[in-house]
Image (cartoon, rainbow, N blue to C red; front, side, top):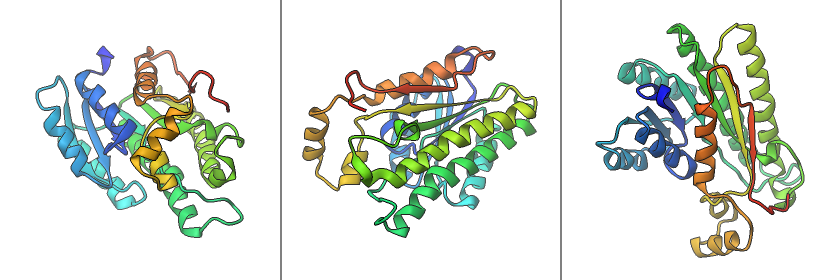
Length: 255
């Protein structure tokens, strides 16, 4: 990670869970981090917590589904740090929504965050990199095993979510091809994770923290640190190596 010290990383969905953990690890590695999310207060709290570490953190309020806010995110990054070198698309949302009974509102929310948001942030980040002659940048998409298979212990309730994650897998490969045709050495990767203990189950199922704890304790699952380690591994690869996709799940996870 030494070569990223002093460089600039955008992390979306940085207010909690994997995003917040990524921000903390990167700042401690000496990276200049722009953490963004719809809710900025938790990131501002992180700014206080990480004050005095090797790197630094800028908190930016950004809804990745809003193009004006995405453009503002890149502009704020340029004004504060000079531009972006790495973009980690971590923001994501899941609802219980099948194709035959799900609500249009939930479909739109997942499509806008998981597909359109990732596409817009990536487009603007690459534009900024290329405008500044950055030829060793990196895009990392936080994906899911749901982007690789339609079966799963969660049943059909997450079918529309799975579709958006399949789209992320396709998007990542399509962008890889576009970057290659541009003859740039900007890399793109994704981490496709299995069941990971975050607050997402609590949000999807609408259960208490205690019920969520019982859910995870009865199933093999990953910790947030496991995902952060995977991202650091991708970033740590030499510029001549592109770790395309890390598929990671707990030992003995059923599917």
